[in-house]
Image (tube, rainbow, N blue to C red):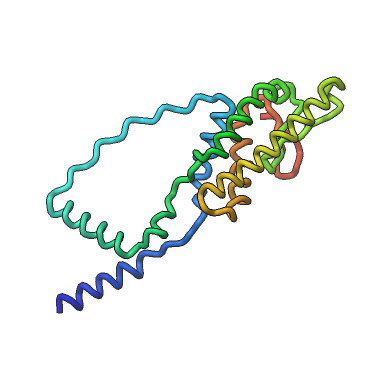
Length: 199
C-alpha cells in the first residue's frame, strides 16, 4: 500500500511539473537595462538589503528538502539548465558593449541636438537630415551604421551565449522597447505609427 501511495504521489508530481524551453522575457528586460545603462553610463540603482528569511521548523525543513530532492530527480539537468537569467558575459558580448560604450560619447551630442532618434525597431536613424549641418552628415551616417551593426551583433551574441540562437528576434524586440524606455529627456524616438516624438 505504501509503495502504491508513493507511486501515486510521484506520478502526480511528474504530471504537475511541465518544463518548456521558453524565452525569459523578464530576464531579457533586466539584461537589456543593465547593458543599456552601462553603455550610457547610467548608475544602476543600489539593490535593497535582502529581507531576513523566515525560520522553518525541523519537520518543514525536512519536508522541503525531500520535495526538492524529488523534483531534482524528476527534472533532467538539461531542463534545469533552462534558468530565468540570461548570460551576458561572453567575450563577444563584452567586446560589443565596450565598442558601443566608446561610440556613445560621440553619439550623445547628436541625440541631444535631435539629429538622430531611436526607431520603433530599436535601431538608430537620422531624424531629419535637413537639420544636420552638412559637415556632420557623413560622420553621423557612419556612426549610425556602426551602432546598428553592433546592436544586431549584440542580440545574436546574447542568443548564442544562452544556447538559443533562435531567440534573436525576441531579444531584438525586447531591446527595442528598452532603448526607448532608457532614452533620456529630450531625445527623439518613434512611436508605433512611425511618427517622431520627444521624450
